[in-house]
Every structure is written in C-alpha cells, then in structure tokens.
Image (cartoon, rainbow, N blue to C red; front, side, top):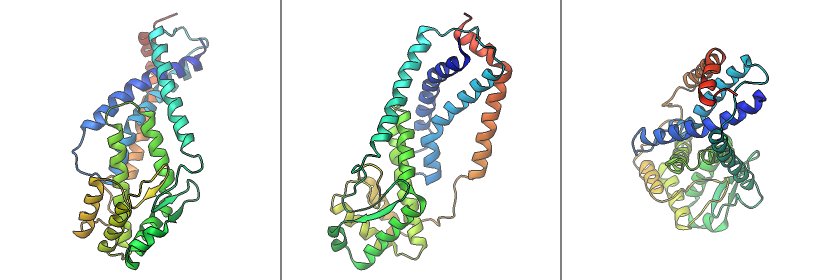
Length: 281
C-alpha cells in the first residue's frame, strides 16, 4: 500500500483512541475549583496533543519505510479511522458554520470579529448601568479585543469538537471560558477599574438575559460562573495579570521534546510497531 495512505488511516484510527483516553484522564485530573486560564487551556487541548505525538511517531516510521509498505489495513482499523474521520469532518463543518454572518451577535455587550474584533453594545444595556459600570464593561471588552479572544474561542470550540464525544469535554471547554473571563476581569481591575463597577456591569448583563452566540467574547457568563466572578471582584481576590501558574516556555520545550522523542521512536522502532498492529501483507 501507499505509505502516505497507511499513515493517514492508522493515524486517524489511533487518534481517536488516544484522544479518548487522554480526554477522560483530563476530566479526572484536578478538582472542581476554577483553574487559571493557562491551566484550563492546557486541560482542554492536552488530549489533542497526544494525537500529535502519535502523528510524530508515524512520521518517523514513514521516513524509513519502503514504498509500497508490506503492512495491510484490516477492516477494524479502517472502520475506526472512518468513524474518526467523520468526527473530524463534523468539527470542521461546525467551525465553518460558526463563521457565517449573524452567528456572532450578542444581546447586550460583547466582542465579535475573528480577525478584526470589535465591541458591540445595545442601548438597553447602556441605560441599565451607571457611567462607571459602563466604563468598566468597556474596559473588559477592550481587553478581549486586545487579546483577540473571539479567535481563541473559535479555536477552543474546534478543539472541543475534535474530542467529541469524549465525556467531560464540554465541561473543560466551559471551565476555560470562565477562566478566560476571570483573566480579563483581572486585567480590567489592574488598569484601575473598581471591582464593584465591573461587578455591576456583569449583573446588569445577566439581568438582561444576554445570551452570546457563536464567536462572542462577553462580560457576563452563566449560572454559577456569574456568582463566582462577582464574589471574586467584590472580595478583591482578582490576581495581577502577570502571575502565571504555568511557564509557557517550559511547556513549549517539553512539548517539542516529546514530539522529537516520538519521531525518533517511530524512525527506529516504527516498523515493528506497525507490523504488530496491522500485520504483514
């Protein structure tokens, strides 16, 4: 068989298995308390990274494999790959659908726009808050614009859809969104905005039943998340935005090291691994 075709089929088959296991494990790790934004992001995307490790191993195998390859694809492996291919297509379709005009509208106040984010505000929200509360809400949304959060939400939603239907994925996505909002709360307070004013704006948006759709970064949230953010702001528990629970350089170096190690294993032991998995043709 063509080695590139074998690589794609085997990767799709193994991808579904490792992502499922890693996703279930990510749901077990940690407690129910809100995590810092970087930690919440890693918990969301970590299962997909395990899929990249498998891909690196298969790329190493391909570098030393003859053409055509002696392995053959069994029905079970092909069926699993076909099933996971459907999940990938579903995730891509949902990502494209979320880019349609009108799917990123916000009911009260929020940030929309994938490449050129902007703040949108409805008149009812502006009338329902004090001048300081409105200024606090605008500062919060300005932080969303600066960080291009609608694009990050789009990528996070795609990462969650690629893990469907792994149990706990929706919870990890919601936890990251809440951590994202808390991080923007911290940035807003760090610029000199009073926590009481931002809490007022959050509650005003909640009273208006603002329901964001699509790629909208918003200053409200939902349910227990609103109460937690308000309590956090009123108690002065917001953290300086410079504080990091995870060193991004250490994570980057570790990830690159794991990918290189996987490629080395594939280069030197990939033939035995694929031969045991698929069998010889």
